[in-house]
Length: 486
Image: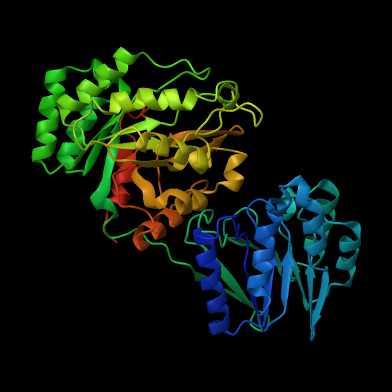
């Protein structure tokens, strides 16, 4: 029997997100490969959205083979839909000829005792599926399954959740089918042949686009040194931080002239924030002075954070965003003619709660401010997508995944900040080097595929990687593989 396993698909609410294209690809591949059973071991939705789940079931209902759809932790993220997902979780025991499949119901972090009792019926023809790795389950479930694993080393056990592929004996850790979350490789589905006990896979390929390197640049935390490097390497773009106003103006303009002569096409400036969290606007003279610098330097574009004012401040003062848009438009009109403006998405911080957070953390909020500016200036205004901000945005990132951001605003992008996010001591750290395309917290599979298909506007891509005392130019490591030919 050939079993197809589709692990950690994470379908979001937005039907144009890349996960849906991946699902269509996987279903076509299953038909071509002659799969006889489909097992979905959980996390088929990104955030427990019932409409998304119903869409998934509607999509697979006409398959000519049996299906076993399990639930994972992501499917239980919404307290209001937990009972629904419990009701649609597959039964535990399934018999297909001489083979028994046990789909253990561990979506909420533990296996029910009645499911654990079924382990006593398992023999050499059994196959066991879990969403979570055994070691991450609640203590009773972990103890019982660990004892089973030791007693029955030949029984195949398939687990997901960790989004990384490895094998320990006959325990198979499966990578994600989700382009946003597959680690170390493109997303994939697996096939297990019960006769040969062979495991194979089919990738939903998301290679680095051939023209991607043609749009690459760096965020210049050390303005003159990084500008010199961008010039030496013939990079497409360079972006300066707000602190560039403190640099020697003559040296900066001379460096920019050399950058242009070396083939540099895009000079960008990251503007200071428009307002404080309480809604107090920034100093107008400082903003205008920065605009003068951009004009002198012949800036091609600017990046502007969505106003970081709290939603409570906006609620108390409904005209606050309009006044900040008026301020921004006045400054934008002082920029060089045709200078583009990118409104950058922001993310949850230690100061934020879902009851009291700042503005600009969702696609809808970013689009709102973009439209306010478009109504006030003739300069081109679009979206500046920061991939790390989208990822380091819990719990909003569970709804607004990387794929959703790109589906919502990809056609309106005028620039990108890309970097990796790392998890250290339970906290996420932004602006880290991208050492590979399919990283642990940010996989660039979706980005590459959306870029290649034209669903992202091709625009300057800035490696926004913070220097450290030990490494003042950490972007060099990321550029090494990004500039390498396919």
